[in-house]
Length: 350
Image (tube, rainbow, N blue to C red; front, side, top):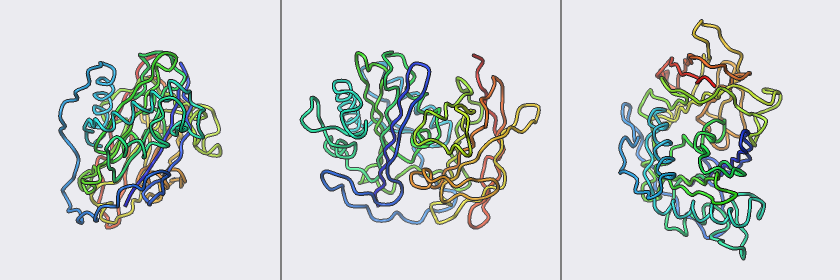
């Protein structure tokens, strides 16, 4: 089965703007050449096992910027329990080709910033999935994110900005196994394109945490740069009925797609909360994909389509500098408890 997902984030100097869309865990038709056929189903997972990549070859980027982005994203994924991404020269090609196209033609030359218009300079493929295939990457799963559009600063924190969202962070913590990076130039020097995927030949090797484990970001012991999520600038936007203000607190992203869930379990959350070091619980909204239900969980259509086994807690107000504790209690189909149940992270001082 193929899974295609497109996410597009753009940030100005001090603000995040994003728009997104795409497929999820069901087959999605794609314009252009027919994608590779779906691989045979993977064997049923066994409790206690996992398929996370805990080591990958060192990246061979000659430029410091792409090397830093590779290391930054992998450091987050390792801490979050999502598994490491391996450098793919094919995905590097597709990502850089599109970054070059956007640099020359701008971000409104097609219906989506992920798309390209044939005949324009540096055209390399109508959409991300055609470009990945053209570069030689036959995928069973693929996703693309684009960040810091409009920024002229070559020092922009594109990876960090993409992680400071709801739907885009979910994509960054996806089950992909490989990654490629591309960067803009000149007036688009801050822009990055990140292509991620799992190969068709290794379709059963998608990153799966072991039984009882989760993916969590911010993860235990981590520090985030600031506690404000510019919720009104992410598209698709979290429901205004749930988060009416323009800003909220740093989202806490949890992925439940471990061996137990892959084997057919559904997740039930009984507690998902955030508190100060003094033990004061903070008002928050919990969003859940279609495989997640439970106390105070709001069904979210975007997660249901793109990441059904994810839940995201969004504090109703920005977080001040300090340390916060996340408490999570959940089970899956057969009553298997999930770990960890509590962890703390820190919001850095301005």
